[in-house]
Length: 526
Image: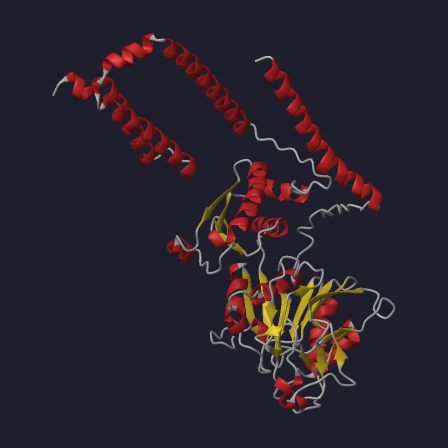
Protein backbone atom coordinates (compact mmCIF):
# COMPACT_ATOMS: atom_id res chain seq x y z
CA UNK A 1 0.00 0.00 0.00
CA UNK A 2 1.41 3.45 -0.93
CA UNK A 3 2.36 6.13 1.59
CA UNK A 4 -0.38 8.43 0.29
CA UNK A 5 -3.07 5.88 1.07
CA UNK A 6 -1.59 5.17 4.50
CA UNK A 7 -1.69 8.87 5.35
CA UNK A 8 -5.47 8.77 4.96
CA UNK A 9 -5.71 6.63 8.10
CA UNK A 10 -3.64 9.00 10.25
CA UNK A 11 -6.69 11.05 11.40
CA UNK A 12 -8.28 7.79 12.51
CA UNK A 13 -5.32 7.21 14.82
CA UNK A 14 -5.69 10.73 16.23
CA UNK A 15 -9.41 10.09 16.81
CA UNK A 16 -8.63 6.83 18.61
CA UNK A 17 -6.05 8.63 20.75
CA UNK A 18 -8.44 11.43 21.71
CA UNK A 19 -11.23 8.94 22.39
CA UNK A 20 -8.98 6.92 24.67
CA UNK A 21 -8.05 10.04 26.65
CA UNK A 22 -11.70 11.07 27.04
CA UNK A 23 -12.76 7.58 28.15
CA UNK A 24 -9.88 7.39 30.65
CA UNK A 25 -10.77 10.77 32.11
CA UNK A 26 -14.45 9.86 32.39
CA UNK A 27 -13.77 6.51 34.11
CA UNK A 28 -11.32 8.09 36.55
CA UNK A 29 -13.68 10.92 37.47
CA UNK A 30 -16.52 8.43 37.98
CA UNK A 31 -14.61 5.79 40.00
CA UNK A 32 -11.83 7.92 41.52
CA UNK A 33 -9.47 5.00 40.98
CA UNK A 34 -6.52 4.53 38.63
CA UNK A 35 -7.59 0.97 37.85
CA UNK A 36 -7.20 -1.38 34.89
CA UNK A 37 -9.95 0.33 32.90
CA UNK A 38 -8.21 3.72 33.12
CA UNK A 39 -4.83 2.23 32.31
CA UNK A 40 -6.25 0.33 29.32
CA UNK A 41 -7.88 3.48 27.94
CA UNK A 42 -4.61 5.41 28.26
CA UNK A 43 -2.77 2.58 26.50
CA UNK A 44 -5.28 2.70 23.62
CA UNK A 45 -4.83 6.48 23.43
CA UNK A 46 -1.04 6.12 23.24
CA UNK A 47 -1.33 3.47 20.52
CA UNK A 48 -3.69 5.70 18.55
CA UNK A 49 -1.32 8.69 18.61
CA UNK A 50 1.67 6.46 17.83
CA UNK A 51 -0.17 4.97 14.84
CA UNK A 52 -1.01 8.46 13.55
CA UNK A 53 2.67 9.48 13.76
CA UNK A 54 3.82 6.32 11.94
CA UNK A 55 1.26 6.70 9.18
CA UNK A 56 1.96 10.39 8.54
CA UNK A 57 5.31 11.43 10.02
CA UNK A 58 5.62 14.36 7.60
CA UNK A 59 2.52 16.05 8.94
CA UNK A 60 3.88 15.76 12.45
CA UNK A 61 7.21 17.33 11.41
CA UNK A 62 5.43 20.15 9.59
CA UNK A 63 3.20 20.81 12.57
CA UNK A 64 6.13 20.83 15.00
CA UNK A 65 7.97 23.37 12.83
CA UNK A 66 4.98 25.66 12.37
CA UNK A 67 3.62 28.60 14.33
CA UNK A 68 0.69 26.57 15.67
CA UNK A 69 3.10 24.13 17.28
CA UNK A 70 4.90 26.98 19.04
CA UNK A 71 1.63 28.40 20.29
CA UNK A 72 0.44 24.92 21.17
CA UNK A 73 3.61 24.16 23.10
CA UNK A 74 3.22 27.38 25.10
CA UNK A 75 -0.36 26.46 25.91
CA UNK A 76 0.75 22.94 26.84
CA UNK A 77 3.46 24.24 29.17
CA UNK A 78 1.04 26.67 30.83
CA UNK A 79 -1.58 23.92 31.17
CA UNK A 80 0.91 21.52 32.73
CA UNK A 81 2.13 24.24 35.09
CA UNK A 82 -1.43 25.04 36.15
CA UNK A 83 -2.22 21.35 36.62
CA UNK A 84 0.95 20.96 38.69
CA UNK A 85 -0.04 23.88 40.92
CA UNK A 86 -3.54 22.41 41.41
CA UNK A 87 -2.14 18.96 42.24
CA UNK A 88 0.37 20.45 44.69
CA UNK A 89 -2.30 22.58 46.36
CA UNK A 90 -4.61 19.55 46.71
CA UNK A 91 -1.76 17.49 48.16
CA UNK A 92 -0.96 20.16 50.74
CA UNK A 93 -4.64 20.49 51.67
CA UNK A 94 -5.00 16.70 51.96
CA UNK A 95 -1.97 16.46 54.23
CA UNK A 96 -3.02 19.45 56.32
CA UNK A 97 -6.76 19.06 56.89
CA UNK A 98 -8.28 22.25 58.23
CA UNK A 99 -11.88 23.38 58.14
CA UNK A 100 -13.53 26.67 59.01
CA UNK A 101 -17.12 26.92 60.14
CA UNK A 102 -18.57 30.39 59.55
CA UNK A 103 -22.12 29.55 60.67
CA UNK A 104 -23.31 31.58 63.64
CA UNK A 105 -24.11 28.56 65.83
CA UNK A 106 -21.25 26.36 64.53
CA UNK A 107 -23.73 23.93 62.99
CA UNK A 108 -20.99 22.23 60.94
CA UNK A 109 -18.61 21.69 63.85
CA UNK A 110 -18.48 18.65 66.11
CA UNK A 111 -19.16 19.34 69.77
CA UNK A 112 -16.25 19.24 72.26
CA UNK A 113 -17.74 16.08 73.81
CA UNK A 114 -17.67 14.33 70.44
CA UNK A 115 -14.06 15.29 69.78
CA UNK A 116 -13.09 14.00 73.21
CA UNK A 117 -14.99 10.74 72.60
CA UNK A 118 -13.19 10.24 69.29
CA UNK A 119 -9.79 10.83 70.89
CA UNK A 120 -10.52 8.23 73.59
CA UNK A 121 -11.30 5.42 71.14
CA UNK A 122 -9.18 2.39 72.12
CA UNK A 123 -9.22 1.01 68.55
CA UNK A 124 -9.93 2.29 65.05
CA UNK A 125 -13.62 2.47 64.12
CA UNK A 126 -15.06 1.91 60.66
CA UNK A 127 -18.47 3.27 59.68
CA UNK A 128 -20.16 1.23 56.94
CA UNK A 129 -23.16 2.85 55.31
CA UNK A 130 -25.75 0.92 53.30
CA UNK A 131 -27.60 3.42 51.11
CA UNK A 132 -29.38 2.80 47.81
CA UNK A 133 -30.17 5.42 45.18
CA UNK A 134 -33.41 6.10 47.10
CA UNK A 135 -31.35 7.62 49.93
CA UNK A 136 -28.91 9.77 47.96
CA UNK A 137 -29.68 12.91 49.96
CA UNK A 138 -29.34 11.12 53.30
CA UNK A 139 -26.09 9.52 52.18
CA UNK A 140 -24.60 12.89 51.26
CA UNK A 141 -25.56 14.39 54.62
CA UNK A 142 -24.09 11.36 56.40
CA UNK A 143 -20.91 11.61 54.33
CA UNK A 144 -20.38 15.23 55.40
CA UNK A 145 -20.91 14.29 59.05
CA UNK A 146 -18.57 11.29 58.85
CA UNK A 147 -15.93 13.48 57.21
CA UNK A 148 -15.88 15.63 60.35
CA UNK A 149 -15.35 12.53 62.49
CA UNK A 150 -12.56 11.33 60.18
CA UNK A 151 -10.74 14.64 60.30
CA UNK A 152 -11.13 14.95 64.09
CA UNK A 153 -9.90 11.41 64.72
CA UNK A 154 -6.71 11.38 62.70
CA UNK A 155 -6.43 7.71 61.77
CA UNK A 156 -8.96 6.30 64.27
CA UNK A 157 -12.11 6.73 62.18
CA UNK A 158 -12.88 5.80 58.58
CA UNK A 159 -16.01 5.20 56.57
CA UNK A 160 -17.28 3.56 53.40
CA UNK A 161 -20.60 3.34 51.57
CA UNK A 162 -22.26 0.43 49.80
CA UNK A 163 -25.51 -0.13 47.93
CA UNK A 164 -27.72 -2.39 50.04
CA UNK A 165 -29.32 -3.82 46.89
CA UNK A 166 -26.20 -3.87 44.73
CA UNK A 167 -24.15 -5.75 47.36
CA UNK A 168 -26.64 -8.06 49.11
CA UNK A 169 -23.93 -10.45 50.34
CA UNK A 170 -22.19 -7.67 52.27
CA UNK A 171 -25.52 -6.44 53.67
CA UNK A 172 -26.31 -9.98 54.84
CA UNK A 173 -22.86 -10.24 56.41
CA UNK A 174 -23.70 -7.31 58.69
CA UNK A 175 -27.35 -8.30 59.11
CA UNK A 176 -28.67 -5.17 57.39
CA UNK A 177 -32.26 -5.30 56.17
CA UNK A 178 -33.19 -1.58 56.10
CA UNK A 179 -32.07 0.91 53.51
CA UNK A 180 -30.25 3.96 54.89
CA UNK A 181 -28.56 2.12 57.77
CA UNK A 182 -25.13 2.90 59.21
CA UNK A 183 -23.06 0.26 61.03
CA UNK A 184 -20.17 1.20 63.33
CA UNK A 185 -17.54 -1.51 63.82
CA UNK A 186 -14.69 -1.55 66.34
CA UNK A 187 -12.95 -4.89 66.68
CA UNK A 188 -15.65 -7.43 67.51
CA UNK A 189 -18.07 -4.69 68.68
CA UNK A 190 -20.78 -3.52 66.32
CA UNK A 191 -23.65 -1.04 66.54
CA UNK A 192 -26.37 -0.33 64.00
CA UNK A 193 -27.75 3.20 63.53
CA UNK A 194 -30.88 3.96 61.53
CA UNK A 195 -30.72 7.77 61.77
CA UNK A 196 -27.13 8.92 61.48
CA UNK A 197 -26.76 12.03 63.64
CA UNK A 198 -23.99 13.30 65.87
CA UNK A 199 -25.86 12.27 69.03
CA UNK A 200 -26.37 8.70 67.80
CA UNK A 201 -22.84 8.21 66.41
CA UNK A 202 -21.09 9.72 69.41
CA UNK A 203 -23.21 7.72 71.84
CA UNK A 204 -22.17 4.54 70.03
CA UNK A 205 -18.50 5.56 70.19
CA UNK A 206 -18.81 6.23 73.92
CA UNK A 207 -20.32 2.78 74.41
CA UNK A 208 -17.38 1.32 72.49
CA UNK A 209 -14.98 3.01 74.90
CA UNK A 210 -17.08 2.16 77.98
CA UNK A 211 -18.63 -1.23 77.28
CA UNK A 212 -21.33 -2.05 79.79
CA UNK A 213 -24.10 -4.58 79.94
CA UNK A 214 -27.40 -2.98 78.90
CA UNK A 215 -30.26 -5.26 79.87
CA UNK A 216 -33.86 -4.55 78.92
CA UNK A 217 -36.48 -6.75 80.59
CA UNK A 218 -39.86 -7.58 79.05
CA UNK A 219 -42.63 -8.29 81.55
CA UNK A 220 -44.37 -11.67 81.09
CA UNK A 221 -47.28 -13.76 82.44
CA UNK A 222 -50.05 -11.25 81.59
CA UNK A 223 -50.58 -12.16 77.94
CA UNK A 224 -48.06 -9.55 76.71
CA UNK A 225 -46.72 -9.60 73.17
CA UNK A 226 -43.90 -12.15 72.99
CA UNK A 227 -40.40 -10.76 72.43
CA UNK A 228 -39.29 -14.02 70.77
CA UNK A 229 -42.35 -14.60 68.58
CA UNK A 230 -41.58 -14.26 64.86
CA UNK A 231 -45.25 -14.26 63.83
CA UNK A 232 -47.28 -11.19 62.94
CA UNK A 233 -48.26 -10.58 66.56
CA UNK A 234 -44.74 -11.04 67.96
CA UNK A 235 -42.09 -8.46 68.79
CA UNK A 236 -39.08 -10.25 67.29
CA UNK A 237 -38.56 -7.50 64.69
CA UNK A 238 -38.05 -4.61 67.11
CA UNK A 239 -36.21 -6.91 69.55
CA UNK A 240 -33.72 -7.82 66.82
CA UNK A 241 -33.11 -4.12 66.22
CA UNK A 242 -32.41 -3.63 69.93
CA UNK A 243 -30.00 -6.56 69.92
CA UNK A 244 -28.11 -4.99 67.02
CA UNK A 245 -27.55 -1.99 69.30
CA UNK A 246 -26.01 -4.28 71.93
CA UNK A 247 -29.05 -4.58 74.18
CA UNK A 248 -29.48 -7.78 76.17
CA UNK A 249 -33.17 -8.75 76.09
CA UNK A 250 -34.48 -10.82 79.01
CA UNK A 251 -37.96 -11.88 80.24
CA UNK A 252 -39.16 -10.91 83.72
CA UNK A 253 -41.88 -12.63 85.73
CA UNK A 254 -42.73 -10.53 88.79
CA UNK A 255 -44.96 -13.32 90.04
CA UNK A 256 -41.74 -15.23 90.70
CA UNK A 257 -39.22 -12.43 91.29
CA UNK A 258 -40.00 -9.98 94.06
CA UNK A 259 -37.85 -7.22 92.56
CA UNK A 260 -36.77 -5.79 89.25
CA UNK A 261 -33.14 -6.96 88.72
CA UNK A 262 -30.50 -4.39 89.61
CA UNK A 263 -28.93 -4.58 86.14
CA UNK A 264 -32.15 -3.50 84.41
CA UNK A 265 -31.71 -0.45 82.24
CA UNK A 266 -35.40 -0.52 81.33
CA UNK A 267 -38.59 -2.53 81.80
CA UNK A 268 -41.03 -2.97 78.90
CA UNK A 269 -44.70 -3.84 79.45
CA UNK A 270 -45.98 -4.71 75.97
CA UNK A 271 -49.76 -4.97 75.90
CA UNK A 272 -50.88 -7.09 78.87
CA UNK A 273 -54.18 -8.83 78.20
CA UNK A 274 -55.02 -9.04 81.91
CA UNK A 275 -54.23 -6.25 84.39
CA UNK A 276 -50.85 -6.15 86.09
CA UNK A 277 -51.55 -6.80 89.79
CA UNK A 278 -51.25 -4.17 92.51
CA UNK A 279 -48.29 -6.00 94.09
CA UNK A 280 -46.42 -6.04 90.77
CA UNK A 281 -47.17 -2.36 90.21
CA UNK A 282 -45.73 -1.63 93.67
CA UNK A 283 -42.52 -3.45 92.70
CA UNK A 284 -42.30 -1.48 89.43
CA UNK A 285 -42.93 1.80 91.25
CA UNK A 286 -40.23 0.99 93.79
CA UNK A 287 -37.78 0.27 90.97
CA UNK A 288 -38.43 3.64 89.32
CA UNK A 289 -38.20 5.56 92.60
CA UNK A 290 -35.14 3.86 94.08
CA UNK A 291 -32.98 3.08 91.03
CA UNK A 292 -31.16 6.00 89.36
CA UNK A 293 -31.39 6.06 85.55
CA UNK A 294 -34.29 3.59 85.60
CA UNK A 295 -36.81 3.47 82.78
CA UNK A 296 -40.25 2.07 81.98
CA UNK A 297 -41.91 1.66 78.57
CA UNK A 298 -45.64 0.92 78.86
CA UNK A 299 -47.87 -0.10 75.94
CA UNK A 300 -51.51 -0.48 76.97
CA UNK A 301 -54.16 -1.52 74.45
CA UNK A 302 -57.72 -0.17 74.70
CA UNK A 303 -59.83 -2.14 77.22
CA UNK A 304 -62.02 -3.44 74.38
CA UNK A 305 -59.02 -5.41 73.07
CA UNK A 306 -58.06 -6.89 76.44
CA UNK A 307 -59.30 -10.17 77.86
CA UNK A 308 -60.39 -8.64 81.17
CA UNK A 309 -64.05 -7.94 81.83
CA UNK A 310 -65.22 -4.39 81.03
CA UNK A 311 -64.79 -2.08 83.99
CA UNK A 312 -62.03 -4.19 85.56
CA UNK A 313 -59.60 -2.06 87.55
CA UNK A 314 -56.19 -1.41 86.02
CA UNK A 315 -53.67 -0.86 88.84
CA UNK A 316 -50.95 0.06 86.33
CA UNK A 317 -53.09 2.80 84.74
CA UNK A 318 -53.98 4.08 88.21
CA UNK A 319 -50.30 4.21 89.15
CA UNK A 320 -49.41 6.14 85.99
CA UNK A 321 -52.14 8.68 86.73
CA UNK A 322 -51.37 9.15 90.43
CA UNK A 323 -47.55 9.06 90.34
CA UNK A 324 -46.71 10.36 86.86
CA UNK A 325 -49.71 12.47 85.91
CA UNK A 326 -50.43 10.43 82.78
CA UNK A 327 -54.03 9.30 82.40
CA UNK A 328 -54.51 6.36 80.03
CA UNK A 329 -58.14 6.79 79.05
CA UNK A 330 -60.64 3.94 78.64
CA UNK A 331 -61.54 4.97 75.11
CA UNK A 332 -60.73 4.12 71.50
CA UNK A 333 -59.31 6.81 69.23
CA UNK A 334 -61.34 7.55 66.09
CA UNK A 335 -59.54 9.58 63.43
CA UNK A 336 -61.50 9.98 60.16
CA UNK A 337 -58.84 12.23 58.62
CA UNK A 338 -55.49 10.54 59.26
CA UNK A 339 -55.96 6.79 59.18
CA UNK A 340 -55.05 3.71 57.14
CA UNK A 341 -57.12 3.39 53.95
CA UNK A 342 -60.06 5.20 55.42
CA UNK A 343 -60.28 3.01 58.52
CA UNK A 344 -60.73 5.56 61.33
CA UNK A 345 -60.00 2.92 63.99
CA UNK A 346 -56.41 2.65 62.68
CA UNK A 347 -54.83 6.10 63.12
CA UNK A 348 -51.81 6.87 60.93
CA UNK A 349 -50.20 9.99 62.31
CA UNK A 350 -47.19 11.95 61.13
CA UNK A 351 -47.71 14.73 63.67
CA UNK A 352 -45.02 14.44 66.34
CA UNK A 353 -44.10 16.38 69.43
CA UNK A 354 -40.79 18.03 70.21
CA UNK A 355 -38.76 15.13 71.61
CA UNK A 356 -35.45 13.39 70.81
CA UNK A 357 -37.56 10.28 70.22
CA UNK A 358 -39.44 11.76 67.28
CA UNK A 359 -37.25 14.57 65.97
CA UNK A 360 -35.84 12.43 63.12
CA UNK A 361 -39.02 10.72 62.00
CA UNK A 362 -39.29 13.50 59.40
CA UNK A 363 -43.07 13.54 58.98
CA UNK A 364 -43.18 9.87 57.97
CA UNK A 365 -46.29 8.28 59.52
CA UNK A 366 -46.57 5.73 62.28
CA UNK A 367 -49.58 3.42 62.34
CA UNK A 368 -51.57 2.20 65.36
CA UNK A 369 -54.02 -0.68 64.80
CA UNK A 370 -56.17 0.39 67.76
CA UNK A 371 -55.24 3.00 70.32
CA UNK A 372 -56.45 4.71 73.46
CA UNK A 373 -55.62 8.32 74.28
CA UNK A 374 -52.98 9.36 76.82
CA UNK A 375 -53.85 12.56 78.68
CA UNK A 376 -51.27 14.67 80.53
CA UNK A 377 -52.99 15.46 83.84
CA UNK A 378 -49.90 16.40 85.84
CA UNK A 379 -49.04 20.06 86.37
CA UNK A 380 -45.97 21.92 87.71
CA UNK A 381 -47.93 22.48 90.90
CA UNK A 382 -48.90 18.84 91.48
CA UNK A 383 -45.76 17.17 90.04
CA UNK A 384 -42.99 19.78 89.95
CA UNK A 385 -40.22 17.26 89.16
CA UNK A 386 -41.94 15.66 86.15
CA UNK A 387 -41.71 17.02 82.62
CA UNK A 388 -43.73 15.81 79.64
CA UNK A 389 -43.22 15.47 75.89
CA UNK A 390 -46.13 14.37 73.67
CA UNK A 391 -44.80 12.01 71.02
CA UNK A 392 -47.59 11.09 68.56
CA UNK A 393 -50.61 13.35 68.06
CA UNK A 394 -53.86 12.74 66.16
CA UNK A 395 -55.69 15.23 63.96
CA UNK A 396 -58.07 17.92 65.21
CA UNK A 397 -60.98 15.97 63.79
CA UNK A 398 -60.30 12.91 65.92
CA UNK A 399 -61.91 11.96 69.21
CA UNK A 400 -61.73 9.36 71.96
CA UNK A 401 -64.83 7.19 71.69
CA UNK A 402 -66.11 6.02 75.07
CA UNK A 403 -69.28 4.31 73.81
CA UNK A 404 -67.70 1.00 72.85
CA UNK A 405 -70.96 -0.43 71.51
CA UNK A 406 -71.05 2.29 68.84
CA UNK A 407 -67.87 0.94 67.24
CA UNK A 408 -69.95 -1.60 65.34
CA UNK A 409 -72.93 0.64 64.57
CA UNK A 410 -71.09 3.84 63.65
CA UNK A 411 -69.17 5.92 66.20
CA UNK A 412 -69.79 9.64 66.54
CA UNK A 413 -68.45 12.42 68.73
CA UNK A 414 -70.77 12.56 71.73
CA UNK A 415 -70.80 14.28 75.06
CA UNK A 416 -68.19 12.69 77.27
CA UNK A 417 -65.83 11.88 74.39
CA UNK A 418 -62.45 13.61 74.31
CA UNK A 419 -62.08 15.86 71.27
CA UNK A 420 -58.85 15.84 69.27
CA UNK A 421 -56.04 16.41 68.84
CA UNK A 422 -55.19 13.56 71.21
CA UNK A 423 -51.94 12.00 72.36
CA UNK A 424 -51.29 8.39 71.36
CA UNK A 425 -47.94 8.39 73.16
CA UNK A 426 -46.25 10.60 75.78
CA UNK A 427 -42.75 10.61 77.29
CA UNK A 428 -42.13 11.79 80.84
CA UNK A 429 -39.05 12.32 82.99
CA UNK A 430 -38.77 12.60 86.76
CA UNK A 431 -35.63 14.64 87.33
CA UNK A 432 -35.63 14.08 91.09
CA UNK A 433 -35.80 10.29 90.85
CA UNK A 434 -33.70 10.25 87.63
CA UNK A 435 -36.20 7.96 85.94
CA UNK A 436 -37.88 8.05 82.54
CA UNK A 437 -41.22 6.79 81.27
CA UNK A 438 -42.78 6.32 77.83
CA UNK A 439 -46.48 5.45 77.61
CA UNK A 440 -48.21 4.25 74.43
CA UNK A 441 -51.95 3.84 74.13
CA UNK A 442 -51.37 0.83 71.88
CA UNK A 443 -49.09 -2.22 71.77
CA UNK A 444 -49.82 -3.61 68.31
CA UNK A 445 -47.88 -0.81 66.59
CA UNK A 446 -44.61 -2.53 67.62
CA UNK A 447 -45.69 -5.99 66.45
CA UNK A 448 -44.03 -7.58 63.44
CA UNK A 449 -47.08 -6.95 61.29
CA UNK A 450 -46.80 -3.18 61.62
CA UNK A 451 -43.17 -2.62 62.66
CA UNK A 452 -41.87 -4.40 59.54
CA UNK A 453 -44.27 -2.64 57.16
CA UNK A 454 -42.90 -0.39 54.45
CA UNK A 455 -43.31 3.40 54.44
CA UNK A 456 -43.98 3.60 58.19
CA UNK A 457 -41.57 4.16 61.06
CA UNK A 458 -43.18 2.09 63.81
CA UNK A 459 -40.00 0.15 64.55
CA UNK A 460 -37.94 3.34 64.71
CA UNK A 461 -40.45 4.92 67.09
CA UNK A 462 -40.20 1.99 69.49
CA UNK A 463 -36.39 1.66 69.32
CA UNK A 464 -35.97 5.42 69.72
CA UNK A 465 -38.18 5.27 72.81
CA UNK A 466 -35.98 2.59 74.36
CA UNK A 467 -32.82 4.50 73.44
CA UNK A 468 -34.14 7.69 75.03
CA UNK A 469 -35.41 5.89 78.12
CA UNK A 470 -32.06 4.14 78.72
CA UNK A 471 -29.81 7.10 77.91
CA UNK A 472 -26.80 7.28 80.19
CA UNK A 473 -26.27 11.02 80.32
CA UNK A 474 -23.28 10.64 82.62
CA UNK A 475 -21.40 9.35 79.56
CA UNK A 476 -22.53 11.73 76.85
CA UNK A 477 -24.39 15.02 76.89
CA UNK A 478 -23.62 16.92 73.72
CA UNK A 479 -23.44 20.69 73.76
CA UNK A 480 -26.72 21.73 72.09
CA UNK A 481 -26.65 23.74 68.86
CA UNK A 482 -29.63 26.07 68.85
CA UNK A 483 -30.52 27.00 65.26
CA UNK A 484 -30.70 30.70 64.49
CA UNK A 485 -34.06 31.70 63.06
CA UNK A 486 -33.95 34.30 60.27
CA UNK A 487 -37.16 36.17 59.48
CA UNK A 488 -37.58 38.44 56.45
CA UNK A 489 -39.94 41.28 57.32
CA UNK A 490 -42.07 42.57 54.46
CA UNK A 491 -41.92 46.27 53.68
CA UNK A 492 -44.89 48.51 53.08
CA UNK A 493 -46.58 48.53 49.66
CA UNK A 494 -44.74 51.69 48.49
CA UNK A 495 -41.31 50.22 49.26
CA UNK A 496 -42.26 46.92 47.61
CA UNK A 497 -43.29 48.74 44.43
CA UNK A 498 -40.10 50.82 44.45
CA UNK A 499 -37.91 47.69 44.74
CA UNK A 500 -39.87 46.08 41.90
CA UNK A 501 -39.45 49.17 39.71
CA UNK A 502 -35.67 49.37 40.28
CA UNK A 503 -34.84 45.67 40.01
CA UNK A 504 -37.25 44.57 37.27
CA UNK A 505 -37.49 47.67 35.09
CA UNK A 506 -34.83 50.35 35.66
CA UNK A 507 -31.72 48.14 35.96
CA UNK A 508 -32.48 46.01 32.85
CA UNK A 509 -33.43 49.17 30.92
CA UNK A 510 -30.10 50.86 31.81
CA UNK A 511 -28.21 47.76 30.59
CA UNK A 512 -30.10 47.78 27.31
CA UNK A 513 -29.51 51.54 26.79
CA UNK A 514 -25.77 51.26 27.53
CA UNK A 515 -25.50 48.33 25.15
CA UNK A 516 -27.22 50.38 22.43
CA UNK A 517 -24.87 53.33 23.00
CA UNK A 518 -21.78 51.11 22.75
CA UNK A 519 -23.14 49.48 19.57
CA UNK A 520 -23.87 52.89 17.98
CA UNK A 521 -20.41 54.29 18.81
CA UNK A 522 -18.60 51.24 17.44
CA UNK A 523 -20.77 51.35 14.28
CA UNK A 524 -19.75 54.96 13.60
CA UNK A 525 -16.05 54.03 13.70
CA UNK A 526 -16.37 51.11 11.32
